Length: 266
Image 1 (cartoon, rainbow, N blue to C red):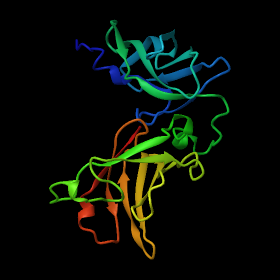
Image 2: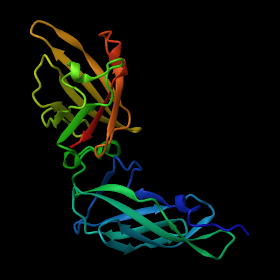
Image 3: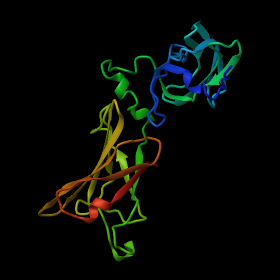
Image 4: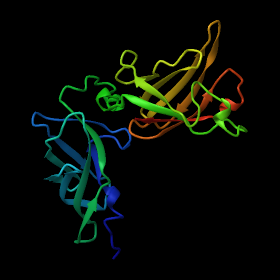
């Protein structure tokens, strides 16, 4: 008879709540009046039947036994108390049997990240699933921006090469713009750079495919301005290092197409 290890069955545990799978952009879980929530899930693996389940909030010393509703579904009530606005990870361990065997095998699902929020915090019912990770309470106030690479064929930036105020290894800081930001589209801008050096705007949007960001550089002279340059990041993270690649410009600057800009929280 074929043996089944916990490693081969780790992906049999599926989550309904907490939602989302991207650890860089965790989605929200609503807390009850006791600052707890109920985790739910199951399995689509026809071989597997649940015997027991246990939930643990990683790094919070919280461990709660769950309920097996039927052989394919489970829930874990009263996980908490948690602090609203904080990011947590839920680890779930299940004891299962596999069709054709009486042996009980423990399975541990990869931790699921989520943001704990108070009841009523989510006000957009139609698109909550795609926008609820965009809350200012978990966003960085400042971002640091720098060039990842210098212009091609330039030996050193010491000769005065600048690009929108960037001079490797120097950095520019972007500040969260509360007036321009919306729940689903936060915005950061440079901190008072002169117009003739360059103005920077970073805007993050979210779709069903994940979070995306656009970084736009605009130079304004006394009598003229240069058309904007755009850089894009197709996998944006609020908590880590993001790499922006050149996307579009009408300037005709051949060197700019080779630029890569790094943006990360301070």
